Image (cartoon, rainbow, N blue to C red; front, side):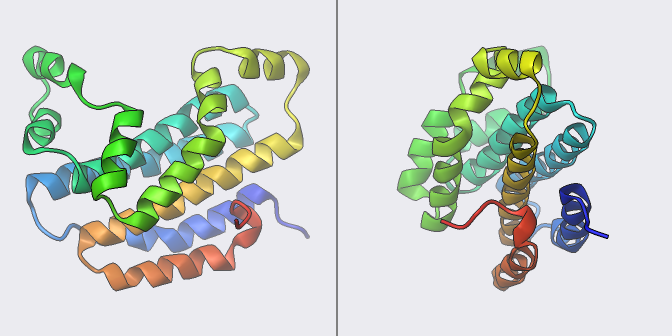
Length: 206
């Protein structure tokens, strides 16, 4: 029996799970806060796939956007955030700290910072996703033409499959980030090996 793309994704998820439970290299504020954002991206991945399987594509697309943003935030926190910015995101949540965090860099600013100080491979992968998907995902987040049209006309099977594959691609990137945060960078080759064994539920290669 042929497996669905959701079943294939679940199998890949089982293999990736061990990399998300490696633990952190140290208990520094930067590592811990980046790790929380990375974990949040993983949670958004699970939610995206669940909603897609239930046929809730517009809602899944909104969470998929958040999946990307959480991953980007994790990488930015590790490589590009200033100490002041890091402190704003790592303080206990209060009305005062909430107000102080309102002027933190948004997506475009974080991407610009990473282009200067982040790993070339991580920046390239994040930028590729942003260039290909960001406009459409923003449309879903703000009830634009994409969700209004699809919600009225129905969701093509290919669109659902593409969203699953893109979400899985971000999950692999998050697993790579989790490996970096564990301090065991050589394990990144193993993560890439997992992706290579599940190409039929991953984004197409460039």
